[in-house]
Length: 83
Image (cartoon, helix red, strand yellow):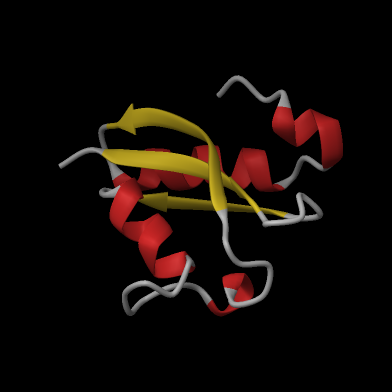
């Protein structure tokens, strides 16, 4: 099972969300309220759109390390991150 890091943008483009998953498309549907399981943080700003996907990562811990790096960035630096 491979892990991916993803970057979402809110409907108005005012905020971003960073997460990891083994199934990014399913996770995006959850964030948008189409299925159960989205993060509380993404209830506002729907619909969310997928901006970037990074990976695959061999382990959850590798994906979490990359997630931590990306979450530390803000604004244009977050959007231009190459992984």
